[in-house]
Amino acid sequence: MVVFVNGFYLFVSSLVGLVIIMVFVAFFILGERKVLGYMQLRKGPNKVGLFGLLQSFADLLKLVIKYKFVFFQNRSWFSWVGVFFLVFVSCGYCVVFSLGYLGVSCDYLSLWFLILTSLVGYSLLSVGWGSYNKFALLSCVRSAFGSISFEACFMCIVILVALLGGSYSVGFLLEEGWFFVLICPIVYGLWLVGILCECNRTPFDYAEAESELVSGLNTEYCNIPFTCLFACEYLIMVVFSWFSSLLFFGGSFVLGFTLFHILFFVWARATLPRVRYDFFVGFMWRYVILVLVFSFFFVL
Image (cartoon, rainbow, N blue to C red):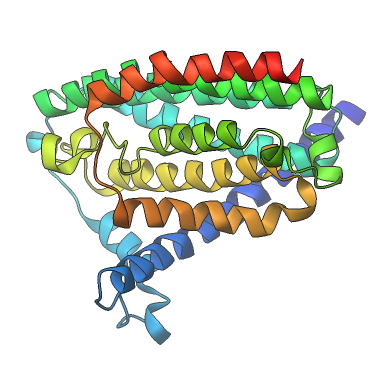
């Protein structure tokens, strides 16, 4: 009975966390369009609702009601597996988010976060491979190979933080601010590079480089599948912003620095040019891993 009650409590908490994050995602998309507009000296959306506040919900309705006949859907069942798997991984991120604030004793929550991060590459591989589109296929292959590079960086940084904190749990990170960024600021910069690539954001959006791949993974998707891919991408950005704040600044400042990381995503998209793919992979394996190894010696 106790196990059932605890499981139900975890399910409800995870569902509430999902709803909160998705509402935040809706206004995050609106805020991104507004900020990008002002950065490019133009107005963002301002027609739907008061000051354009309902624009994201109108876009959601437009995406949902669009329909493509099965006759024209150039996708296999493998693509649907990838979409559902990405939604499942996004819900897993929400479970990690809710567990962090429930106070549940989980000594390896950071490692579970890394496991979820590694699963995103498999979902993107299924999404692109099942599209029967050469641009989507090239996109998913680049994404799968690039994920090996920045996931190695993620793993080293989380282990480094665990060595300093003495645990893989996020409980000690939520208790107080500890500003790990002041100890290893270079590691923080490498982490920012990694999350840009993980979330497919400029200048490392190799899975969805519109100028090279005709939107890449999303080329053959519309209505509900496209909405799932689009929403999950922004949900992962919000969760990564929260987790980055925990790792490098601590729980006392988590809200402020979560907003800072979200603005960082928008700023990077508005200002930074795309980096060539081979330069990025070479940089990650030649320099980043070397810097992290020296950081381990510095911490120890």
